[in-house]
Image (cartoon, rainbow over all chains, first blue to last red; front, side, top):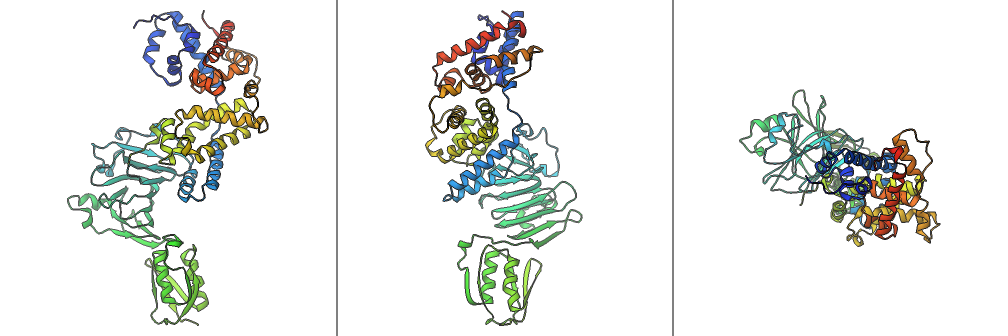
Length: 359
Length: 181
């Protein structure tokens, strides 16, 4: 290489190319070669470099992660106040605010093969797709956007592996740890989560998967929509058949499905506090005046997505005045049943109302 | 839908993406915060003022994002906005003389030089504050001379002169910092 220019240190500092080399490592070989042309050149490169680096060092701010979080929370609440009419934005930004961000580029292996410990579920990884791996090693939840517009919120320590673009037929991701999924509806391309011993097939929209590495059982909690949970083993054994021929456990909102690691047995129960499965204003009727308990039970079933059985001995003329709100289901049931002297119990993801109506 | 991997995007790309995907905005903030904070505390040592300024700048940017889509260099824009906020605040809500405040680009007192690094530090401290700000913008923030000129309301030639004078200071002290002729 021919170096016509014999740079002085000041020329080097004035040379944007040199500055970029020191700051970003651009054209490294050029400047290394230049530095090797003479002792003087080497000294000048070193001097100019030292000046830039010392400015960098002296001007670096003190530890600022905590301040950064505080500032983002501030921006957050400002934005929320200003964009009240636009609920969609404030909700999304609020969610983002809940995350401390650690951008760890090095934990992402673009090809996905070098750093990844192969395990059974790796069979889903086909070589013609480029996979991204991400581990949330921050202390709070971290959102990951998938190619189809779906979003996964990784809890701390959770790991996900997903393709940059999904293939033509299915959408598959690999999960270790706990994550919440908000899945874009696409009936032609089912969405699968491979989580250790379980495979979750998404039939609806949002759900939560707990799949920790240790001996804990795998839990799937559905918020909206519907998912099917399979045993990974069966999915692999029956690869020739379509997955639909297997007999999965279907999980709907307010339910938790558990796959026991010890014996691979499924179990299903209601969440501790079943909540409304759709916004109040989407319910056809929320206020009931002297209505039959049967009408109210039907409304509760729709509102909470939970099956409620009522003892047929309870008369249709058992009347209630009540208003549905954002209360959890059990609270609501207590308010309805207690004054009437009725009882309710939970069994096999169903609720049974029994007793004699006092009114 | 186009796949978005924010980690691979430049700040300008993140800004362009904010219109479609508000998470890009969060990433932009994460990427820019430390640099803006570094610049802010050079102008105004009171950390809480700097925090407020950055917070306001991002809030405004979000609120008016639809009118700000034409920003080409988001980093330079943010630096300028933070600077403006801090100076406006220091000047009791009136902007009269930006240059006067620019001249107050702060440096803290440091110990006597004991080695080459400390000598460099000493030179930086003893520099006129405007020169020091230009050095920060050029070598810490990575701005080009025209961008610095735009930010500080100087023409590019004045920026170049300012840098030259800064280099002279290094040269004058070359015995201390091992600068060859």
